[in-house]
Length: 211
Image 1: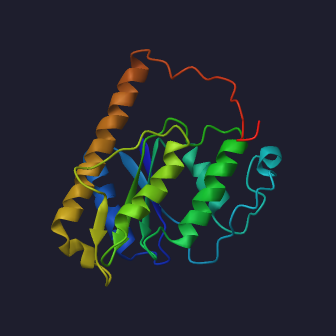
Image 2: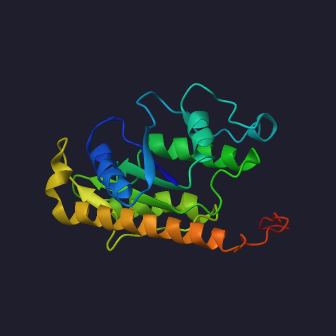
Image 3: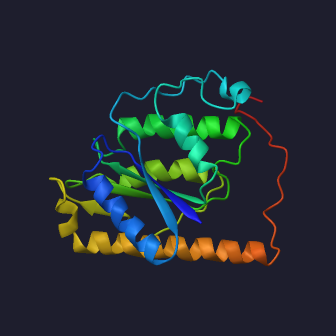
């Protein structure tokens, strides 16, 4: 079993990376593999709603790491996305990144995200973490992904690189989150081995508010 840890910070090895590394360490202690995937620091285009992914099997825009991430997620069992807080919200880069990843991952027909447990981590100097977590979690709740929690909100505080290590409660909660994720994955695997089938799928009905 493997968990994808998405680093949505422009800094490859900043505080978001440090937070995700604490999760990776705890997952490893629980016998769960993980990979930290950095979205990069180059500009990331937003989804244009062109629908080409339904024909191509991937996003038409191939100049960043979105398609690479989606391909990797088809082989992973869970996702934890980490983001710095920018103006009481997730970074613009990770928002654009996840928007295209989730849309193309769904339209391509791949089993990219459905029923895979997920969680979010917010890293801030001071405030805005709750709204950031709410924003990131919406990608999961619309995609049939069970949301895993810690024992508190999944946020840590720090400004300079490495300062999050001084947030003892925050870092401890990330270890709770990692162990809860490992427990859920093991329960899911045990259910699969016992013959428990995934929920029945239906043909999706699309409506809007005028018909």
